[in-house]
Image (tube, rainbow, N blue to C red; front, side):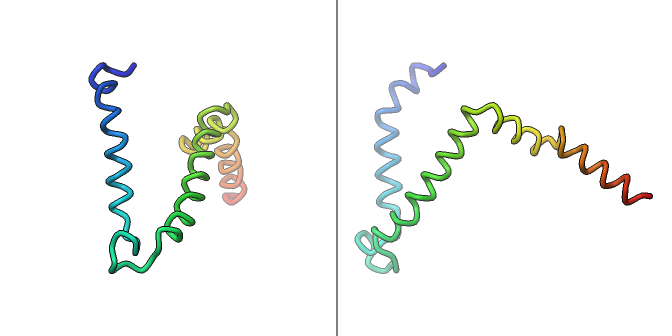
Length: 92
């Protein structure tokens, strides 16, 4: 649950976060000593951001993805069984 303080501060924090991120970019339009244009920076960052966002939404809303990630991170389930089976075969 969002606290009252967070609800009151969010309208100020979101625009400030955007402007500090935008004007902190090293692009020719803002900083004459940089090597990249704003178009190049956006061409790189927007697709990467979209992919990360899509993966996060996939993981958040699909049970299969959450189960797979939990198995990989905790090393349980079928992956663990396959590893133990390979270790047993190597010991023979």
